Image (cartoon, rainbow, N blue to C red; front, side, top):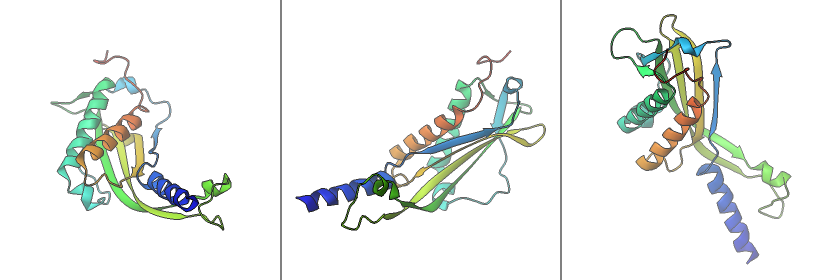
Length: 186
């Protein structure tokens, strides 16, 4: 019975790290920038940054869903997509997948052990990172950058899970973007 409990604890901790890892989200905004001066945006041309992972770069569902999620969140913040002329802002995004390692030493620090010698376990997983840049069109200067990182375990081959992860990442990143004064601007 004790062995079964230990096995269940190991399986649960591995699943927690790879399948349900907490999404890390952060952002950076240029200091003292008045976002009320910006009203319109559009998607910027591809830039010179290296390509990400082909599982994302060549996935039209991923690309369309990221763009749709960004456009929805920007509209909620009061920004409009430019249909003619030069927009105030250009939007770029970059996505990549990297191999990550997590050592579950926290369990040991709190007295949770999985075997007799209480060794830390090393768990390898793939993490997806989405970076969203907002560039001032007039100066080509990045004025805001947001990023989100989370495990992609069970996401790449499941459109529903991918859509939920994209929506959460974009929503949480753009929550950090300053809001315009009113939805249609003054």
